[in-house]
Image 1: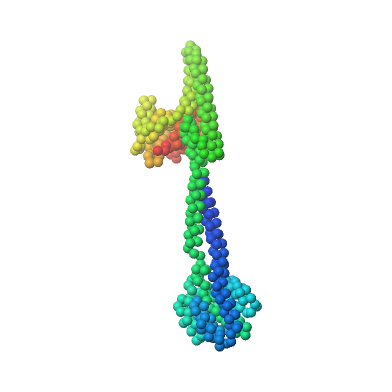
Image 2 (image 1 turned 30 degrees about the vertical axis):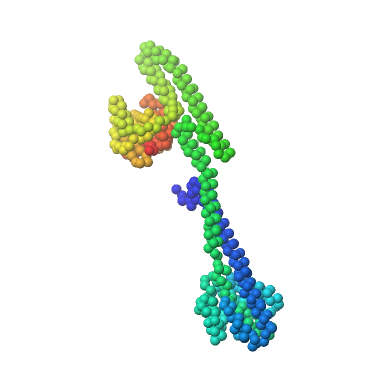
Length: 468
């Protein structure tokens, strides 16, 4: 059997498609929300420090150098550090931090309202501090304190540290060092929880909906399988959605037509059999009046074959038409009974193995099925050897004979009604060609099967498998 990543049932495949689709949709939605939220929160979180930088720049433009130094000492309050002695920054880092830096630079220029030089560098952490080392840098790091993003520690994973430089009206550069909080750039647990809950609710509803839709198909399949075992099974309930009611109605119509067809065929053949009895009886009486012994023997043989053929055909039809019983059957007692019947006719049947528990089934049908297989073995193969193999799931009978076997191409054809082989299995034996066909029909109606094969050592082996 080829391996397939998809389930074999319709229910499993529908659930699989919905699960994969919803997971992909939720993953894409989470990614879009994350990206959009990152941009919006960055703008919202950056607006306050940008506006504060713009206000300080305007204040510095109105002051001289001495006043600026005094104001710097006042404004150095975490999380904003202001310096006036740092050289111009180089280009910002590439990638996502560079994009954020350009966005914040554009926001700052808009807040300032002029074309002065502005440089913004963004860092995901404080591992590489763009601020030059020196007394001033050390002094401001001490002012910011631990965890401010200015010393040995940064804002933590996911935070953004901004170094902003603005050229004042007299050409001096003012540097602003600040940190956006980690929460402004991270995906919160609440969003993940919301997406997870939504995904689980949708998947649960999908599971219920798919089961609700696929259940009528399973019921229809079970009814179709049961129809082969019992043609008189109760009809399906015509309820549910319109399509389900239509399917159930079509199935019930088909079942009623099959029952009607089998009943009509049985009645016709029964009538033919009844009508044939009178001419057959007259022919037997006339055959008794023949003086030629050889002619009389041939007549009686032909009449016997006709009578057997009609009887077997009617028996086969009655077996298919009659509803099967379901009672515990002692299979070993059944085999011993058939063994005794064959012993009285001079036939040899050996039995080995044992059935641990009774088998549920129709005793008359089982006896007929096993009896036909035994007749086929002892008539055409001299003797029969029966092996019983029991298991919790099934019971298997292997019936072996000592005959010449049959060609491989004919192993399936012998189950066709009225089919008989030439040679050792010829018309001289008196068979009608219905025994194996009836045995297979009974086994399949019980949920099992019959198969035959040629044994390597010679003879045939018929295998009857009956489910428990």
